[in-house]
Image (cartoon, rainbow, N blue to C red; front, top):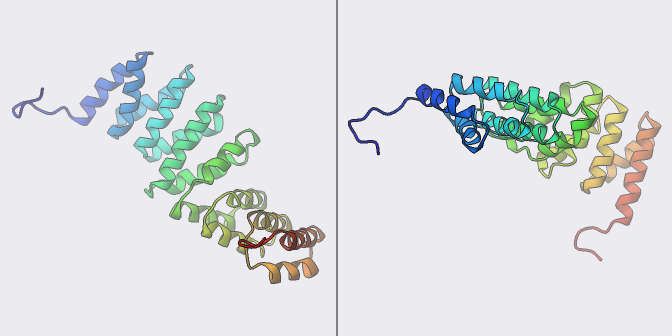
Length: 239
């Protein structure tokens, strides 16, 4: 038991002690890895980043969780690398979960975490996990996805339109409505299909116009299909 006349152990001292214990391959080492993330220590961060290269996927997953607790710029960069490069799906999901945690924390590095999740959409083998993470973004972090819709290349905008359709939030629907005027016809088509899928109201006039006047035949067809779907799907509260 610590008494008032005993000096408290400092952060770096605690990190050094836990770093030594983290080398244990058993439960003690795993517990030490988890504790390191809460110290915001350069020593602990280095141990966690090195653990991301461990042959043990469980230790790599725990390191990813701890890096999310650290939340520093270097931690986000390490999580981004893991989400993109690790060969074990459980580890990549842990890394994306960590990025999601940082993104929703509204910290100085939230935007970096959101960007990493968006980048993960480019890899087909990781896309569904990235979609799942993006669907859980909140408030300001979700707004960052909307901002990306205005500056990203067309292929990324198409994927983001699909991702926003999986988010149950008014700002996501509002951004998809804006995407109906996107310069890229495939983005417009994706926005129509996504808005139709989620049952967004108040689009009849816009879709009727697009079905007749959009320069893209594919967009016209998508608009007509969405209008047809709206006619056969009962409105809430009707039989």
